Amino acid sequence: MQYFICQLFFGQLTSRNSLRDICTCLKAHRNKLYHLGIKQYVNQSTLSRANERRDFRIFADFGNYLIQQVRPMYANESIPNVDIDNEIFALDSTTISLSLKLFSWAPGKYSRGAVKIHTLLDLRGSIPSFVLISDGKYHDSNVLDILTPIPEAVYVMDKAYIDFKALHHMHKSEAFFIYRAKSSMDYSVIELNYNIDENTGLRGDKIIELNGYKSKRLYPEPLRLVEFYDNENDVTLAFLSNNFDVTALEIANLCRNRWQIEVFFKWIKQNLTIKKLWGHSENAVNIHIWVAICTYLIVAKVKYALKSNLSIYQIMQILGISTFDKTSLQELLTEYQTNQNVKEQRNLFSD
Image: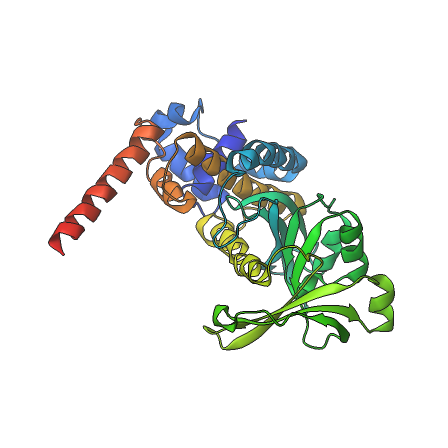
């Protein structure tokens, strides 16, 4: 438990770059360690051995336990420009590049090493509901074979997840999917909706069927194709879905909200400490990533419990410089929000 606390609340929140870094800082503050529930500082060899020998599934199980606790807290969160009650998920992966010489167990593309973090993110609260860590060669669409679709839930994906067999299984499970269609997709239009408002960015709303021999055999049902013009990037996007009930604009807005998973990956890779991994073995890397995810989930739980208006990133920044502070979390976060409100009022009056 001391090992977990060291890595989770100290190594992550204070952005330590190595096990040696963690131990050096803990030793320097050994008279204050009781604030973290640690009786004495832990040396580097102890952490290193635990990284190699303690099964990462302990941390994965704890992460999944936190997911079950935290997700319901944000179940009623709204999603910008979306007015449906379904559970809504974004599915994607992020890649951490590694040296193949040091991480020979994690092959990637082009003779390089890599680890992928596959994540199903609940867009209500940006809380992960499923996480899979794999090597860099594991194809994204394989995750669809592992997921158990939730009836009436909406899964928003990029075109890397085009697997018509898996998508048809999702359809038969009464779940909905929306994903970016490839420009080379072969299809025929069955029905065309002429009542679209191009001022919203919509360019088309069609019911189609696939023409390709293999794709039509794997997915024999009609599909919906929504075309949307992104004026910021001057590009027309096509979204394919099995949902015929929501409006075309809601389908486009659901895809626009997929950016939340990119923000989550950015936090995991930049704001949490996984830029420099704390070990080279598969077990050590899995522990490190799961500890980062657990940290994110615990801070999300703190945010909810204290009803804080601060973002998870802001709370992490505050906690990072307050590790040994005796001030309660509620007082720390309340004081920060009060100071921010005062600054905003001053700016308002100065204008």
